[in-house]
Image (cartoon, rainbow, N blue to C red; front, side, top):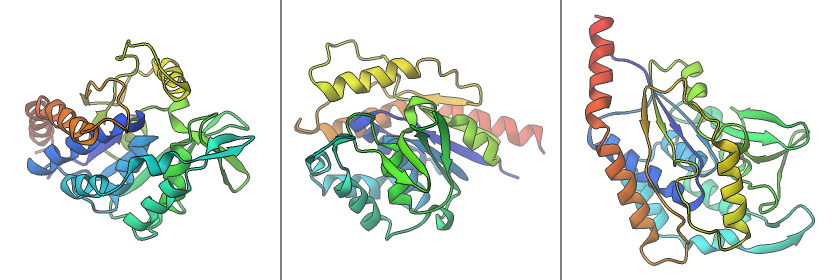
Length: 258
């Protein structure tokens, strides 16, 4: 009998592309998640993973797009980035799939900015849920869903290890982009807001995590040449450093449940 493995993909803006490197390493070593959950940029990777994408397929998909298309400005009293192109990209990638029909059970985190509650999205359009989970307050226009107004889930759950544990995971792998690791001076409003979310998220304790993978990614601009490849490489290195620990956890679980 094999343990059920859950993977929690944490928030981190464009640095969340490092999650792809982690998935590539897990794929190469035959480690497959039975449950996944994600927050913010981690929600997009969790959704692609749950939709059946390998790490290699994710890498090829992001290398084909211009990330700047996701940052088109639209003046609005609720924000200045609308995120429509981002939603369309996820919809096209996953062929308009819903959370309920994903190949791997999936949860995506958001926050209802009206009530201040964490919202765990478990049904409906994957693309809309990913956009809601990624809507940085004050930057992206919040997403209306039912009677809720949803923003970035990182405000309350930057890396949802507890959610995959509650889904039934025996072993939880959490991928955290280390809030506060970058000490450089923020250069624009988006970096200031991302850093603010990082500060809010530092209380995270990873109480439900068995293996914590922490790709150390500084502030990277989508304009920087090679940024995508660099993030993915950093994710791969971080995952490789934890492979022996993952195997040890799996073997220990099997021994205790023989």
